[in-house]
Amino acid sequence: MREMNMRIIHMSDLHLTSDKHPIWGVDTYKQFVKALNLIGSIHDVDCIVVSGDIADDGNLLTYQYADDMLNSFSIPVLWCPGNHDNIDTLFAFAKSSKSIIENPVTINGIQLIPLNTVAPDENCPNLNRSRGVLFENDFQYLRKNILGQDNPSILIMHHPSIDPGGWMTNKILKNRELFNDTIQHYRNIFLILYGHIHYHMIHKQYGKTFVSAPSVGFAFNKDFPKYELDKGQEGFLIIDIENRNVDVQIVKI
Image (cartoon, rainbow, N blue to C red):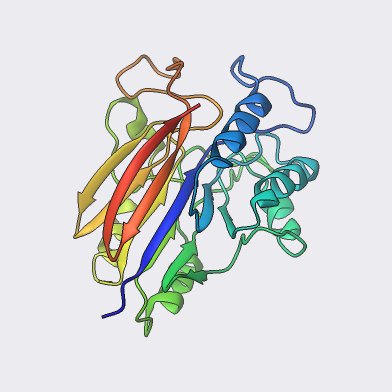
């Protein structure tokens, strides 16, 4: 059997804004540039994955800036949307973006599938709920890209389907039971990458590995009071895959 190896940079929750104003008192642009400088010193990277909340304001200029900067490394870049992203703006931008935003891509024999777990707020147009959800068309998209697929597959999504505990329990995927029940039947799915909680965790369940990236912008902690910043824990992940074995390193900013 052919070996399938990959090195992924997993970033999440950049929370950039078009006017560069601080978020939670943090200069997220400065954090982003620090992360990019660190990535530039890492060797043998096959792709960069950003699991949502690229923009805090959902502005087109923010997406254009992030797209230009992330693609300066000349390796594939894949995004999925987060609850702070403007879905209409992001998916319209996907048509001209250098990053892969809507469609799966296969790299080194491993398929990466971005999922949209964002739940629009029915009461507030242009805003999204903090909790995520997958609709039937999302499950159809997942099944379409998994059924008959021999390649090992990685899912990239914003919201966790595994309960992180503490106050972060309220930030999970609403229909996580249906999602978890669905993916456990697909043996080629071996890794799920997510963000949203601004906190790094690793779970192993259903024979799969679930990994959340610490936020590039600002970090939280499930054991701290709600929304209290965990300063110094901002960062991203280096994920090394050898066949289906997953090794994770944290890079703090």
